[in-house]
Image 1 (cartoon, chains in turn brown, cyan):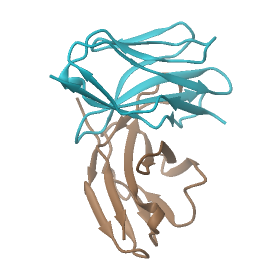
Image 2 (image 1 turned 60 degrees about the vertical axis):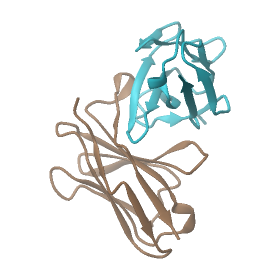
Image 3 (image 1 turned 90 degrees about the vertical axis):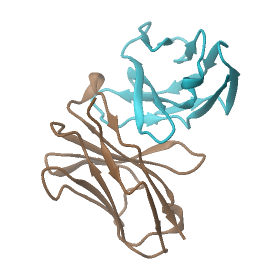
Image 4 (image 1 turned 120 degrees about the vertical axis):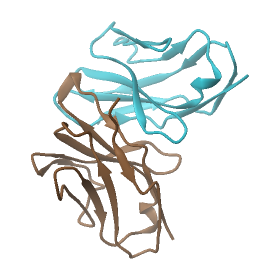
Length: 115
Length: 112
């Protein structure tokens, strides 16, 4: 089965530094997402992306966050100035349709640790 | 707003035991309901889903029935295997909203 690939699997950074989390969605998918899970808490929606623009974002996705699809294959999440509370597992996902029949394919996640 | 509540974990069972993982939800409208599973070192994978009341989703011996009257979608398996050890997430999707709302997840460990 096709899969979503995320790199790196672990990222350690100092508070205030910029990080870029990378994802390669499934090649024919059109809808892209980032979710995150802080340790012991729920998986939370961050942002959805379609047709080269953000279609929806959560309250968590403030001005420190941005997403980009720089080429035909990658989908990145950038955190400009990391905070301790950004430490979490970040999941990328992609889908080829929306709504009730939607099936999201998730990557294995990037564990971000902010020190 | 929409929310999903899962029973507290972790859960440890012996092989061939019966499994129930509870999930209840609060949502506006008529959500689709999902169970996702995350095996060690892998991404979240869709395990099963149900899109309307009384539907039963099933896959790999797991089942869950969409109960509108109790707003529940409990996951069951009659006989668990060691290979079922993973983290299980209940989730919902409402209407045309592409945003999944997840529960906290629960870790299942199955002993040989």
